[in-house]
Image (cartoon, rainbow, N blue to C red; front, side, top):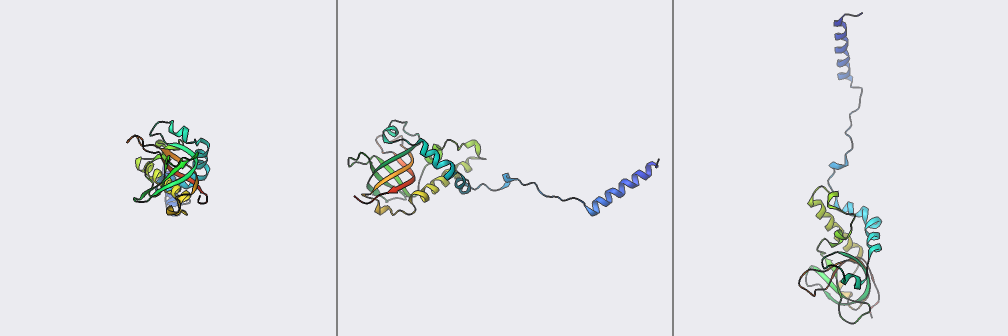
Length: 197
């Protein structure tokens, strides 16, 4: 048997050799949680595969919309005629007379350049606050969804050319709780425009 001192010398030499030659590779473990949250990237991933199909599958017409609670965001699909365009503020709207038409507006389509509110995010029930780190990220998702909707449905559209045109709209509608009698607003997700009548 080797004396205890020999073991000590051997151990010291082994530690010294490992310290000098370092026969290992140190790499940080990939951790996605440390990347900054990108709401636009998140929306880009879900838009075509989850968001639009979810709205299409749950969309209702105007009668069902009017029968729902005032402030509940509701996916809608409708056809109508644009009877008025208001671009006096950055939250522009186009008033739509929904088929069967009677010459009076039934809904207000939000045409930007600013879309306000969180109706689009809130109508997508697979997006939950608990999925995000904080309220800021949750709010960023709402803004990114509104921006994506604006780009997808309205970017090539000249608002001034909408009046008198037939349209088909897929979007999310909500009605403000006050004042009473206000028309429902719609955030468009898809917009098809026909020829002027």
